[in-house]
Image 1 (cartoon, rainbow, N blue to C red):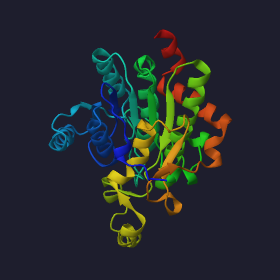
Image 2 (cartoon, rainbow, N blue to C red; image 1 turned 90 degrees about the vertical axis):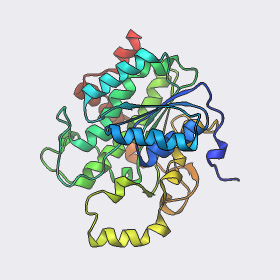
Image 3 (cartoon, rainbow, N blue to C red; image 1 turned 30 degrees about the vertical axis):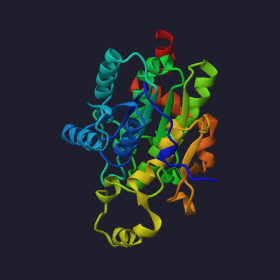
Length: 312
């Protein structure tokens, strides 16, 4: 069987895509490939200068790319609401939403503008709110897809409902693993609810394996002995950001991608390699916990999918 590559992306002419965290790394490579396939792509990020540079970089490769940059800070529900209002004002429908943005293993506990633990708030709750508020535009598309970027870290994750915001005990990697498990659980639950409610959208998830991005290079402990060893091993156990984006792109564009599917690299421990179906840990398949997380997210953000769907 031939490995899936960007050459397998079908024409996306006439389709509109939004990619979060698209000013660099995986999001940038995802936006680049979508634009190259003819999609109208809206890159979002917190750093407007980086956003403009990303636009320039994509246009250098694809001079006729239909792309734009919009400010969006997933760590602020007000910013999410502002973006979705601007998008709705200029777009009738949304064919693809790539929930990619994230922060990783912040050494000290930080809070979002709304008081959420920063990793849970940015990586998950912001994307929950974004997806809900874009639901009317997603439903108007013929076959909309939502692709949620999780991580191998979900394998070590657990949702601590008793201390969801890590106010009593914060550990950087534990919080990161929880946020990425939440993203995968959200993806699976969104597919279940879409089918049950007739929303007509397809929800999928993906992870990049061990991709060389600024998220890792500028992450915590960059000069520790462990990180130096990791950098020495990188050529053997990691892949480029462009390669790391392939599972997301497969989930976003392939006719063979399955609703509720999860995709990642096909190599050892899913660290690197061409994309394929990825392993989902049992805790991500816990329906009761997923439903509880969904309800808690609605309460924390004040945003209800059901209410938005009913009003649309």
